[in-house]
Image 1 (tube, one colour):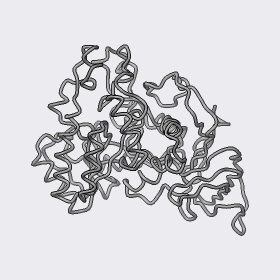
Image 2: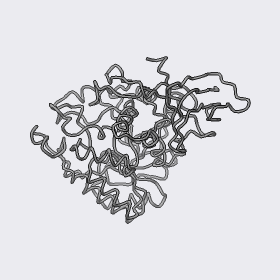
Image 3: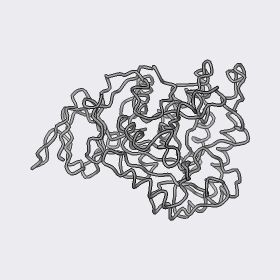
Image 4: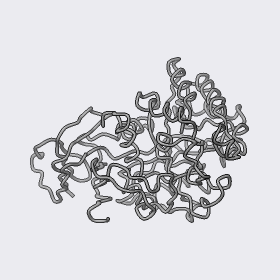
Length: 429
């Protein structure tokens, strides 16, 4: 279908474009931008973007779809509806499914199921070790051929550093990226909140910042030794950001991301044992939160993700220490990014870069740009429209988020995936 998106403000961080412009789409591809349609172009559908931003579709580096294995928490259909409603057109899926994404057939099955017109593009992250057990390396080359863009261990640490070294050496040989969370499993053992005043007052077992920095030091040193392309996921502390900056200055090829909830919340937001604030890694201090906000603005933190983790009510509505970790985030990635940018007084180009072109580069996929010839993965949103986060509003099957009841800026009007209108606000809400 030929689609004409008209009267919008085109913001494309990859080309530093921020201007009034139309976008023309044919056969799922972008065929032109500007004020004049390409020669011979005739629109079959016109989308009015007056007062709206036209930007590349959002790219999320961590979104659990809960399939296969955890369909009682969420289904592929429900989470893809959430992605489209949030303007997310491409996402990376961690390997901690059931069964674990450690065999090519499982990866192919997931990507095949996701090949529907209204579904975001799914890029699996393959398991570094069989069953995520930290003992035997997976066949990374075969997993890569099946569609894995990187290899990781989800929220689970590889305790045996000999295995971790061999995994990084193998990945470096084929230039496969390795995505790992920095958290020492022994220092984090039994912990449910940041180790500090709040945890002590509430009687909760704490996880110290050292759990992140000690694990991060190991990852960075092994990256230096092997030359692997290391991406550190969900940095949560000021000390962690400082270590990443120093490592980069020393020539270690490392990138990192943080999750959007860490930009707005700290350990005080646990409140009276709010299970929605049970996250991994835990919410840390106000100082850590402010360092993450500043680090993301400066580029010290390379990208922002939702860390979308839908949890059913049975898993979440429990005492804080027993509640399952995680929060839904696909539909809140854009508004929470806009909220952060507004509060930091950042240009829209900078803010949108962290959820479009920057994660695209980490993922190693030539997307995240509005350029003729590329797939028409586009988000159109109204920055002046706000909405209140509610269980009814969320399309994800997981209604768990610490932002319930909050008024947030930015309303997605249209999401296009390969030129297909996957979401239209004026038709569905």
